[in-house]
Every structure is written in C-alpha cells, then in structure tokens.
Image (cartoon, rainbow, N blue to C red; front, side, top):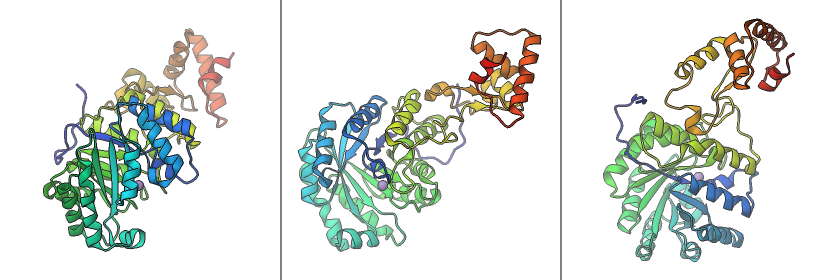
Length: 381
Ligand code: MN
C-alpha cells in the first residue's frame, strides 16, 4: 500500500468534509461574474464530485442572488446548499425563503471589523447569536456560524466566548475565517487547538491566500482537529483568493490519509470547467491540476518516469488519481526513451536507425529554443 506518514504531531480527524464557496467567495474575485446557467452547472459539478456543502450565495444581497440560491436548492443535489447571512433577521429570512439546508451567519469578532462594518459593541455582537435558536428544528437545517476576522488586534478570549455562545445557541458547526490571510500555520494550529478544547462544537476553517498560506493554514487547522474545510475551485476568491479545492483535498487524502469523500479523479475536470467559466487560466505550474504537473522533459527524468513513475513524481499522487495525464515533452535534453515512448503511444514503432534520425531532428529543433510537442514529433519525416 502506498502512503507517506511524515506527521506524528497530528490530531486530524479520519474524515473531513469539504465546503465549497466558489459560488460565493469565489465570485467575489475581482472581474469575475458567473452567469445563472454557469452557477447551476458549477453547483451540479461540485455536488457530483462529492462536495459536502455548497455555499450558493448571499440571498439578501440582491433579488437575482436570492433567485439563484433558491434555484440551486431546487436542483435536489446530494450536497447541502448553504446561504450566507449577516446576523440580522432580514438576511436569515432571505435564506429561509430559499429553503437552504444551512445558513452561514457571520459576525465580525475583531474590533476593527465589528466597529467598521456592523457598528456594534462586543456585547451586542455576541448577543445576536441567540437569534439562531428558532432555526434548530428545521429538517436538514444547520446553522453555521462564522466568527469573522482573524485580524491584527483580535481579542482571542472574546473570539472563544463568541464561539461558545454560538455553540450554546445551537450552531451546528463554527467557522473560523482568516479573512485577510494573516495567520501563520503554527498560529492557526495553536488557535484551532484551543477552540477544539474550549468550544463544544465541530469546527470549520476558511483561509485566504494573501501571503500564499491559505492551503498551509487550512491544513494546520485540520491537524488541530477541524472537521471541515472551506475551499474554492482554482483558489478563486477575494484579493489573492481562498484555499484551493484540489490542493487541499489531495494533501488531506494523499499525505494525511484523511477521507474527504471527493471523487479525486474529477479534480482536473472541475478545475477546467471553472477556469473556462471564470476566464481565469490555470497556470501551468499550478499544483495538482496545472498542465506541467505530470510533464517531464529532460532525458533522465523522462527515462526514470517511464521505468517507474515514482522516481520523479510523488507516488502518492498519480495523474490517474486526479484525472490528469502524464505528458512527455521533448526539449534539447531529450533521450531516446522518451522519443520512442511517444511514438509507441501513437502506434508508431521505429527501428533503431529510424529512431536515431528522429532523435537528432528533435534535438535540432529543440536546440533553437523550441519545445517539441507530440504533434511536432509526428510531422518529422
Ligand atoms: Mn472569505
């Protein structure tokens, strides 16, 4: 059996659920607006690949948004459909009108966000959580509380108190977002560890990528015992985006051996669908889904991978696992093995003399700084 155990200091759960916010936070990516039809297709795809909860939008924000959330709920997906709400009755009512399975109520806990966005005192902010109580008896109804804002100046004791109050008031899961992406992995692990000890409620995490730490911080929270992760396809989201779905899932599954319920072999397909709809190209070196992730160019690497793919690929993540394909490209360091393999893959079986001639021609093209693709190879006469 394959598997790598690098970690001994982990309190990670065996199962972690995936909450996708591509349709809410992801759509807040500057310059991105999905059409109604695209949102429906993304929601179907997310549910089909095993996402546990889809945050479909913020119903109180506009009539169109409310209609979309209601329409996504009406699809009858396997995934739970969630709506976002401020901790005010009108917002919660808008979610209830959409018949969502889960309401994600957010309350800023950092002084800077609370005073500048909802203009409330700490006591008023905390007290608002009691409003969630009437939602509890609803079938499949979950209340998800987002204690917003790991911002500089966050009073941690107050954050813990808000979470405890929410848990007592019936929250089914509590989300801790690093809204501006400033926490470190060790800081996240320590904070989540404290919340796991002091708050009697499953925990969820939502990380932003301002310093490129979104995935690392998400994993740190999982190590401390978080039950759920919030992600977006291709890491879309405000500013530098959120934790990426494919990366977060593959790290949990392949490195930690955590079960997420995600159909991993559909990760590349999902990434491409959202890339097409968002108009945001996937960088070739994007982990897991990028075009270069399983491509090999130099002679030694190519030869090694053809003999045993574990040589220069992480054996715990193969192209087959994520729905990708292995690609050999021919550069100036090309070897006979790679050229022969590419030809054999195309059902061409050259003898040694022919192969020598073809390899020389490939090297000649590549030495001019060009990358020789499979199509170029078949053109060589
Ligand atoms: Mn966010």
